[in-house]
Image 1 (tube, rainbow, N blue to C red):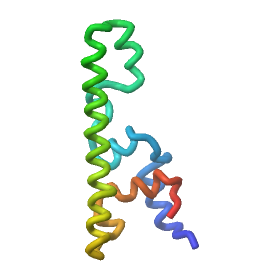
Image 2 (image 1 turned 180 degrees about the vertical axis):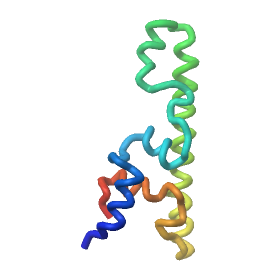
Image 3 (image 1 turned 90 degrees about the vertical axis):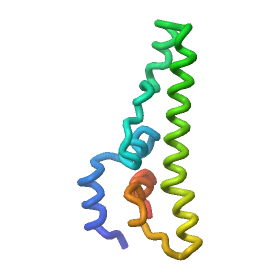
Length: 107
């Protein structure tokens, strides 16, 4: 059975599907996913300034890896630790609903 009230609340908060890293970072962590530059700008960085492109790419990749580590800590590691103690619920993390929505709303 599908809880339509829950689906409606989710659709109001997230009018579209949450799939990519950018959406997870923005909605789950509340951070700007492009704070070290946009992923789509990498080709432009190489074409416009090849000498600094390496530094910019390194900064972008580092920021993305830090975001992944934070998401892992928030959604996976903490959830596993809490589940081991028998206290994990979907309300334990403010970003827990992001994984539900990211999976196409499947439960």
